[in-house]
Image 1 (cartoon, rainbow, N blue to C red):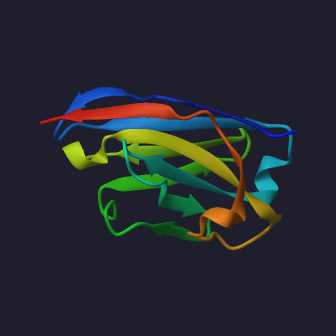
Image 2: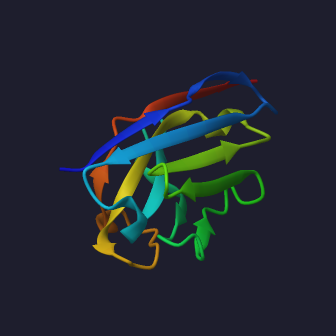
Length: 126
């Protein structure tokens, strides 16, 4: 059974930075793409960023492109999300997820992601 544990959320002023981490266990981490998603109050969960198993392919939502950076350390079974120039509209619970396909190309579609963490809350004040 896959376990994903996010950390690094918190309260930050607009323009600030946070680094989220997601530690994985229960599956060979290096075989699977990883993704970050977020869900703001009253809104649906949305795609933020994804990285392939080898880090060769990375994709971002337009809303975060140029401000967020996803990366992974397969030796530590951990995926990261560096968030810079944060805006109040980035406020949400952030979730990491693991692709259901082994060695798959990262997808923005929610139904490709079958294992989810418990989420970490990010609040950006104006």
